[in-house]
Length: 114
Ligand code: HEM
Image (cartoon, rainbow, N blue to C red; front, side):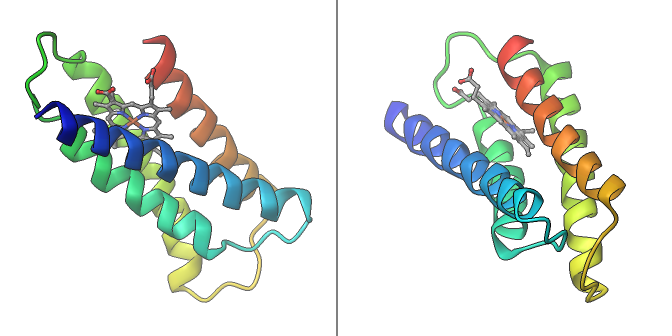
């Protein structure tokens, strides 16, 4: 079970890298269009996060409220990323992009500091 836990954590951290990397690439190149890395990253985070929340042989479970808050934040990120993509938007407003980046950073803060 420890190996499954480690593999899921590995996928979760790679998903985080893909998500923030996709966001940074778009933001720094001033091309404010949702890209495939952001779409994949948000889906990987939701999927791997849900499986990571299983007991997986842990002695101490992560705080339940923390997991609910993270799930809500991840859902908000997924909506902010997938809706413009599905509506085939060529670009999003700067405010929308900053909201995506800010919510990603808040979610990482919840993961690390809570
Ligand atoms: C965009 C969304 C997400 C981001 C950026 C994110 C980020 C992170 C990061 C950076 C860690 C490592 C924290 C550390 O090792 O100190 C982590 C761990 C964790 N995350 Fe997420 N996460 C996201 C979504 C989720 C979701 C939706 C869930 C489940 C509801 C979740 C559940 C967990 C759990 C259980 C751990 C602990 C892993 C372990 O056992 O070591 N995450 N997350």
